[in-house]
Length: 287
Image (cartoon, rainbow, N blue to C red):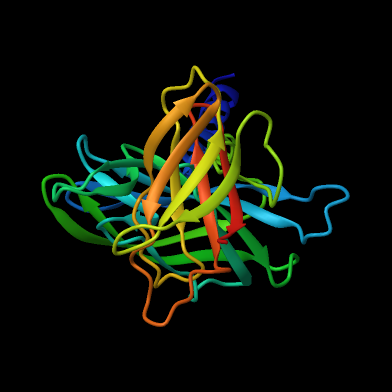
């Protein structure tokens, strides 16, 4: 009797030892935080996405999480009047054909020099769509990340991140939550109850002025509009609110910050319309 009891206790002790030494599921689904003085970044893993009827390739859902100290900010893909957007180098990854970075709706904030920047405050997750070279082989995502963070001053930060992607990551809910704030992309027509209704030029002083009319819920006080040029060397000003008439709102900006020899007429501009509940990204040709 004593021998049997001792054997059972020994078996239980071995099992508990193995369990204690095994990594947790959550640890396998997120890289370690790479910490800077006022920020940290990590990769998180979601599931394999294969949408029926979608002609696109199946992809692995992943995410890049930023954790910022209170009062610190980081930048969107187009930083506005000042700032530097993040840079991504996934070239060291294994079995990765391509990575698409998705951008949740940003906000504007004062840059401390009289202008406004565009970016994120607090914690933010950028969804990643990872397409594999061979779905039957292991996939490891490696990222060399560069980004700026700002409070009363701006400082550069960097991170080296690595995460194996199995297609069965436990962080899928966090990534999907971030995806819901990525602007919907439509070429024409309204997205539910928001739209970029018209874009036209008006003669100005040193520069022509662009007038943009958008449709948004009349009771939403958080409507904002951002504009990007057809190439990264366009540095257009942030559109400013210029009047409201029910659901119709007007924004204007000077046609300034064009690269040398650029032609404004016919240029394709990208507009991102952000409200408290929705976000829309559309392209419009400048008349």
